[in-house]
Length: 140
Image 1 (cartoon, rainbow, N blue to C red):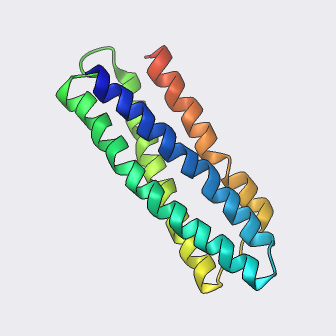
Image 2 (cartoon, rainbow, N blue to C red; image 1 turned 60 degrees about the horizontal axis):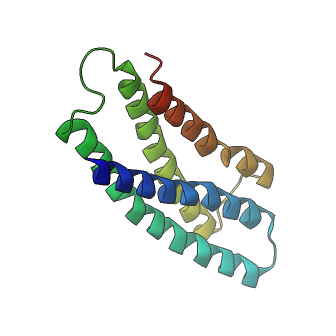
Image 3 (cartoon, rainbow, N blue to C red; image 1 turned 45 degrees about the vertical axis):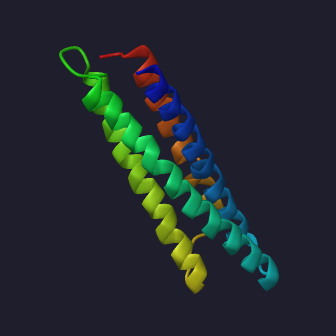
């Protein structure tokens, strides 16, 4: 079980690195006017999004393995797991929202400012803090 947990943490940390960085690329795309720079940023964003998706899959599979296979978070007194799973669902939604935003940038249809993307960039930070507190502290 410890190897499953260790690799789960590695893939979660790697996925989060992408969730932190891709919206930062969106900030730069929203500010950029020079077409060659826009193309370079779009290329970076596309590659990062694909890599993030690859990282997300084993992170989720290993997490479900811990939960369903080893019983982590099952039984009475494990309400924290339900809250954490809700955060996981929100993170998956955030991940797909990033993909949707990327498509809008590719089509030249972005209507949001770099300031909006700066706030959007903070969402995964807040979700990570909440998830770590739930897993470590197990408040309920």
